[in-house]
Length: 295
Image 1 (cartoon, rainbow, N blue to C red):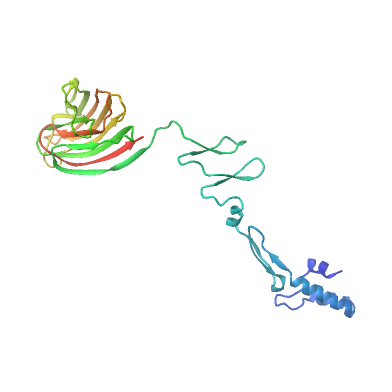
Image 2 (image 1 turned 60 degrees about the vertical axis):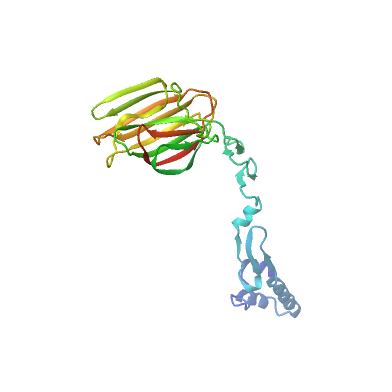
């Protein structure tokens, strides 16, 4: 048996670096031939001086003379062999692991089934996205002018309003010139409104009005805990088509009873709209509104 064969079966050094009993027995079996002994020692020295070098994706290694040599997989280094591009995605193709380069901003990662590679695709359809624009507070204001951006097809407005004058309603009007003027012609708007409370239900409508009624006059009280709150949707504002205004509001009456008002109306002209004004039918208002844009 030569030294290499021995080393494959038994350790030839102890953990402290001294020759093992297997190696000493090997030397004894060689019969003390000095030439063979020198050759064996030379083989041992050469073997111990061998370096185990960690290749790509591995860490560790070192000299066998220092005892056991450990190699550990470096997952980060292994993945970096495939790609170091920020945003790249690793996937399995039909034969091996592959890399999908980053797509265009807004693209959607799309699977094409078990027998095809994934791809980036431009999204189509869907319900759009809603962007929070901000919150605005107001106090003792004759009206609240809410700007509407042409970047969005529709807008959602949530609000809370208290009124200075008792027994009033809330109306809305449209601007097409950033509030230099506000549309108030006698037949600029149409609307229909359903109101309900614990004691009654009523409907009012108009096929030609100077404003869209959100809450009918005399509905809202001005005492403590009397207010109007809810949401308004403004639809198709930037388009050259009639702009629709939808309102769903809760209000407290002068008798501190709960009421609800559901309104849908339109500004009839086919002109792009860039703002909506909300105001009480009499007196000032205070509160806040939150605005979202929908694209």
